[in-house]
Image 1: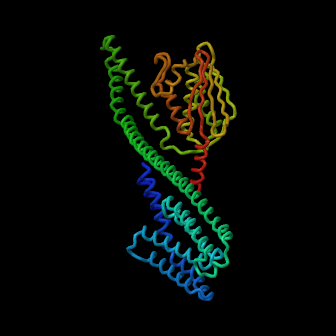
Image 2: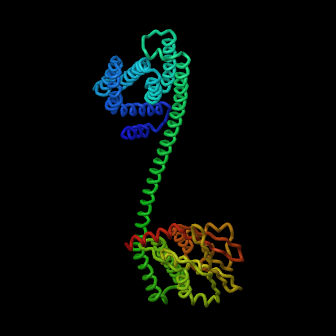
Length: 462
């Protein structure tokens, strides 16, 4: 289907920006269709007309045989002539077929293929010419049928087949031809309009999708560039910034140790500020480095969340005991995930529930999970101090803290890590909270992601 590929390329180049392009594309389609027809016209016409030529000689109708031979030669001329224009080929072929149809009507009447040729010509013209020519062909068929009626009525031609007709029988047969021709032309006209509309919509949609795909690809390239910059920053943070910061902390420690007694109160206070600021900066850099490493250099593995939670509770046992906290959990699911990241998510949520407790109550923490159609939904509920509604979205932003550092320790990175880990697993995280009553943190793990993990493991095994 080389013509269809060429037509598609033309359409893609024009992108159907105007009606002129649409008509050009449709005309191109017709020309390519006709080109394919004439490539097979000579062998097909020879095979079709050869029996007619033989039977014309047997039936002693040499003139009909002569016209059949001339038709084959005409088809050969149209097919093989090297310089003949495409439009000229179309016109010559249509004229030749009309003459052949008329000869067949005269010598064979409605018992032969003459009427069938006229009907086929109407369809053929509808396909290779603009639709107005097809309506003209219906009018041409009507004129031929009327002229043939006159031949029958007045016996204008001395042909034996004419003598077998009555005017009524010919009108009955030929009227069907005219009606069928008109119906076919109208149907093909509607078909072409529908085909043209469909093609326009299809390629417009393809072009739109292509543009959106290119825009998405550009966006991905930008994101990759930004990620590369972030990785470079993380490298700098882990090496170039850590080293001078460690030097500052060492110098501060030496000053405090060796010159503590020689410094006045203000100098010691300034030294304390410097030490605290350097330690906090080191913690921020370390936290940022840990945040940037989430999801890198890790492998999917089958994770039993019950065992994972038990491990987290074991590691936090001392903190749980100090706060006299009670932690309960239902049976949790098992699926493929990033174990270290999922463990960090549980650690951060439980640590927050213990940290932001009410002083007069022992922490009561509940961990649950439910399986839904396309995801696993987890919740971690506490009876702590809660969060005001205006701060709900702010808490998931890196380094955002709602409380004074002196009251609650930390650098404000835990929930940002939780958000990144949930998104890493194809899910999301959110919170419902009532101030002074407690908070419920929800997060989801996508089943599509866990299925992807199963696929990776299966491929690895093979």
